Image (cartoon, rainbow, N blue to C red; front, side, top):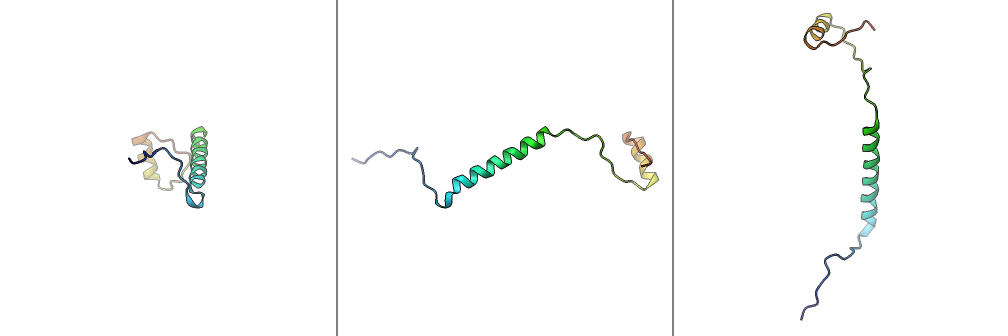
Length: 68
């Protein structure tokens, strides 16, 4: 009779691959938490030198255009 095998055995990986994957996941988790905890910036500015395009943005999207 064949000996039953346990499918939930620990597999030994070469080059410590599991530790590398674990550290990558930990770093990814840390970066995602930092991104989620950042406050959104309402002070985002872009230079738009074209006056006609400034007028279009103001009329169409109500975007505030400042001189500086």
